[in-house]
Amino acid sequence: MQNLLRKMGSLPQDPKEQNTKWYSLYKRYSESVTVKEAHRSFLLARDLCSVSFLFAVFGPWGLLLFQHTGKWALLYFVVMVLQYFVLALVAQNYGNRFVCNVIAEYASDPNS
Image (cartoon, rainbow, N blue to C red):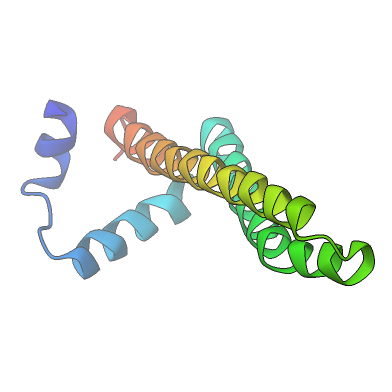
């Protein structure tokens, strides 16, 4: 954290400025192995979360149409909603790790 503060001076407070600064750092270190891996993991978790949301919304309708029973549709819906929330937390954690890896690359780079 001390290296980061020394290199950047004061950290931006405005969310738009924070995003602009982080994105410029990401572009600089996007080829780093740790950044690539964190980005890949974040994208995978985000996509899995999105797909689980679609299954939670549309899956029960399919069960109701083809099995004509509400019990299984409700059970399926509950399981898919739980899966969605778990994957949302996973995606959020991977996103945070992705940002931290970019900032860590910048803080530890002796050339910047």
